[in-house]
Each structure stands twice: as C-alpha cells, then as structure tokens.
Image 1: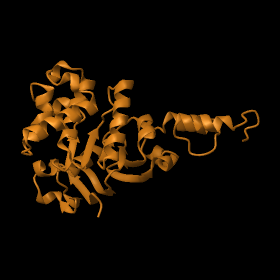
Image 2 (image 1 turned 120 degrees about the horizontal axis):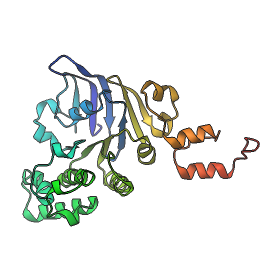
Image 3 (image 1 turned 45 degrees about the vertical axis):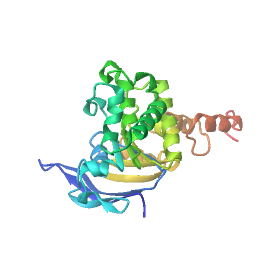
Image 4 (image 1 turned 60 degrees about the horizontal axis):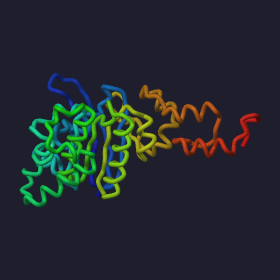
Length: 274
C-alpha cells in the first residue's frame, strides 16, 4: 500500500462552494511531487485534507492505510506536516528555537532528542545563527524557513510546502532545492504547491496539474510540461526553457539548461538539422 492514498475526495465549504471535486492520487515514500494550477484550482484545499486540517465531504484519505476521518488533526500532523503559504499564520513563539521546539514537546521526546532534532533542522534550513532571534525580526523569506525547520524537526513522513518559493532570492531557491534532495533521499515524501514553473522543472520528477477543482494530469514533469493542451487548459505557462527549446526547434523534451546546451552542440541552426 502507498504511503498516502487519496480516493475520490471532494470538499464543500459551509457556504456550499465546492472547492475540490472527485480527486484521486497516491504518494509513495521518497517521492517529490509538485501540485500546480491557477488560484482557485483546489490545490490548497486538497493538501489540507492530507493532514486533517480539512476532512473530505466525500471519498477518503489514507495515511499508512488509516483514514484521516478516524484521527484528530494533531494525530495526523505527526505523520503529515504542513508549511503554510504565509509563515505568519503559523509562527507564535518568541524565538526561532522555541518555534522549532514547540511541536517536539507534544511528542514527549527527551531533552537530548529535542536538542538534536532542533540543531539538525536548523542546520538544514540555514537557521542555526537565528535560533535566539524573534522570528518577526526576520524577513518574510527567512521566516518561511523557520516554519520549514519546525516541520523537518517533527520528522513526519510527508511534508507539504505551500508556495515556499514566493519571495525567495537565488540563495533561498537553492536552499529549497537542496532540502528537497536531502529529505526525499531520506525517504520523506515532499508535496509542494507552487506557481514557479522553472523551479518545478528543475526540481520535481512528478507533477500533478489541477484545474477547476479536479486533477487533469498526473505524471512525469518531462511529459506533462510538453502537453500543450493540458498547460493551456490549466492556464499555465510552460517553463521558459521548454518554450525556448521548442521555439528553437530542438529535438527531445528539454527541461534544463544542461540538456539545452547538449542539444545545441549537435544542432545545425543554419539547416535546422542535427
């Protein structure tokens, strides 16, 4: 059985608005998945059902074979961590150290275990030098890494990042890329919501496309990004590297600069032939 099984889930808000309609997919340990789509496509509502912040009105979400309907949000959060799009919706402790430590106290770990987890999470996210600082004295881009560190320290099996690239500079983007590699290599499943198609092309093997509350594509990024009809239907731009390669007439589904450079070396632009 998969780590996460999402089967025909739907969610309707109290005012009657249907936000997610009959969505299904599964997640394996060690997978790195990007969920993309326009605002209102149902992405955030879907991932909030993965960790119990919302419970499906129809269908079911199974984590390690157990339905989220049978557990509290706090219980599910030990297995599925969620990093909010806005870190200010999540941070409430006076120091970075206390913020990372908060969730660990609920797990009844020893002081030594807590300390080790905090140090490791801070090191991975670049927060070591900020442990004694009030999070609200840090820029928004760095506050995002405070909340990411909190989830990493909890050691949950699935980690959901909602728009982590927003407001990040090159250093922040590189740090996020490194975290993805380290966490998935350790067996964690990473699910990221993002509008940054370049970041997806560089970092994710699997892409789920949502449009109008449904999943309209789920597959390898190398395949999905070259399905122009899917991208148009979801009102998404292909990554720039894809559009440039196609515009230049280069062969193959090119997703990164190295692949483009290799294709250019064997392509005769004067004759448009290899």
